[in-house]
Length: 340
Image 1: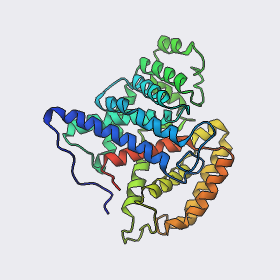
Image 2: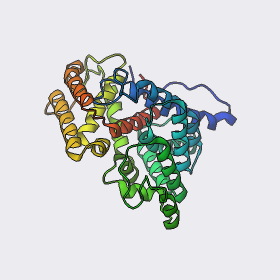
Image 3: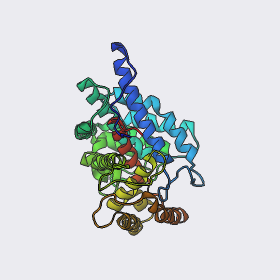
Image 4: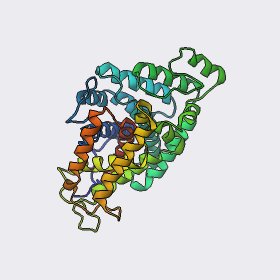
């Protein structure tokens, strides 16, 4: 089984080509959201086995499906990130009653979808190759750097609709109704807001660093899928189903171990976030061994992951920012032809 699809796309007429590309991009984004929430066990987060009292698996499913029109429009757009974000949040909220499900994911998927649309259109092809991923991230970074004051205002409006838990930007409080007037008066762009927040918000840091962790996630997922029963030194054995669930769980732990989750830091404190990252690293180290390669039976990893999952669920610790990065990584990998 090759994880990279070199196969066929439904033929389209020349006039429908652009719509076909934007539809493909939107479906990759939707599938990324659906795969992420379905993967289990992802310590502390909602998945097909676990709900939280107010936010359930089905809420994430509904949100993932509801935003197709916005994602398709984003793939055809070259500006207006703030309005697209607000529209995505409004669509998500209209289709489910579980509150904020994908605010951080939308902040990543919208500029990446815009970049994918521009890149595929400029190259005249219907999918990316892994060699295109760096250019995709660079184009997304260029789009976010070009955001303006109105994008910042729409971001604040989206925040109020979603009711998302974040650290307020000190200079422009997210709960202060006067902040939008101040944004316009000082001509503060959305990118500037992300620059202010990058030190304590993982998603803001992605905007300002060029979506590096998203690329890291895409690479990890793709390499895991390529290692399934490959016979190579780093092959993965005894995985479940198609392997995509285990690729997501592994990459979730990997990213969590390397990057402190700022959603946990906001909800609890820095010490708790550091503990969660350290514990994820311990679990992976025991499985990978000193070489840092995938050399073991994947099923042997699951008991420790499940125990970690139960611990975080009982303490109501959910690494939401890491889940957003996983979604973006899956999106990039799917654009590159990942199939299972």
